[in-house]
Image (tube, rainbow, N blue to C red; front, side, top):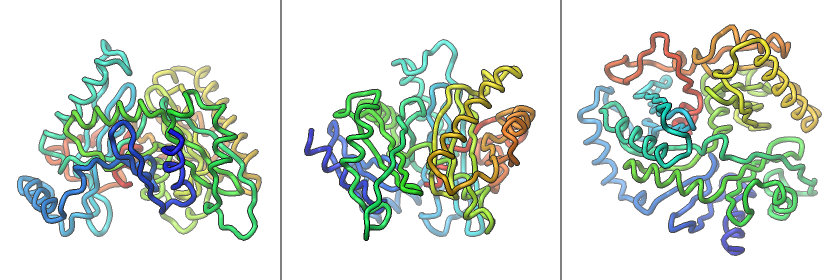
Length: 377
């Protein structure tokens, strides 16, 4: 077990490093977007993959693609209550929606149960077989409730660039006692940020194995396992932070899900802070509950300010689109006394229509942000 951890942690120093570790008979690859995953089946000859792609697109209503690299993998956001899937396409001038789907968990099924797992894999199998999606390659994310996030302060090291200092000992000593699961059963990723701060993100091995089994049984090929905070920064930077003034701006991103609110503070794609609050749109049914959420959001801002003395948040960006009532967003922005921006992912991409993409754009009240970010990864 000790040798496995040392091999795993060897990639933490730099984003471009890649290490491999055998966990529960699966090949795990660390990549810059999170916990990358590759099965042996991924090592297919390039020409064979091209033939599969050409066969897939032969019956597609999507215009002929001039390069397979422009077609993104399917972004899969599997939560306790919903399964959201999106596939995007770089058309040379912008981003187009190839396909999208959102399915809600039946109320008689308990989240996290064996029945939930069966429902999730059947949903993904059916959605990817409806003729709208192209291929079976996916980028997925571990659900918010099953991801551990904490922060450490890195000591300055003379003559070494940020992100190249070995951090294994620091991670072990400062995080080991905080983990909600056994340290030997944890997969951990270190993300350096600014002002000698670093985010430490961890997941339990058995949780990752469970999700891998779901995707495998659904007939999908997992390109990588991402993490929701980086998916949110990717979504913001690609669609809502493209102006020159946005490059250095620190923004407060809010993704209000049915039963949780995901908070990310970033500078463009540079992740600075992340937290998931167990309170979402289903609970925001009055002024009292909105005020409770605002208190949590204020606490996040205070925590951020204590970590980053030289940075100031410039604005609030809601990434929930039309999935959350606009009055709630206005109330939150007013209480926080911050300028706010509404981000509608579906309105930011070119659209082929309901018959081709499977998405009805009219009054669509689905939260697409994390799935969009995963597809872009």
